[in-house]
Image (cartoon, rainbow, N blue to C red; front, side):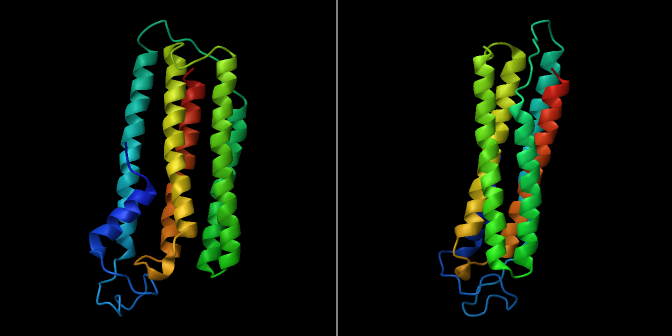
Length: 218
């Protein structure tokens, strides 16, 4: 399964750090003065994010292809009503894309306190989305719809679970951006926040695609 944003950040820094202390000031423009270590270009981090997202796209496209092929194979595909809480969850996730964009603007303008508030709100909305997904599973279970009930329900559980796992990875990334001590880092917090926002928007768009697939493909 493709890695999370936090893993990507750590891989890049491990590959360039060599176990040497990083000077205070982070990802500044002086070429890493104070330690002699070269500055890592920001585009290197964004390239890793793009590669990770490409891997996730291929992963979910393969699942989508399996979904469509399996649906057309036989008469055992039984449709069911999607839990209404999914629509509330969708609103929460769309709202979180708006709040993370506000947070990104705040940190770019140097408003650290406002950034922390909007970033925390984004994290809370992401957690509420995951709780809502669990509630959706409970509602289906109450209706007697389980993972092994039929192929349709199996794909619902698998697709929502895999998206939830990737979104949980995004939440870990949000916490990483918020609480890491950035004074001794090769990468600025604003750069990490920008990478996290790209991943988060992608998770939002991916969920909208999956919801449409599950709703129209019933």
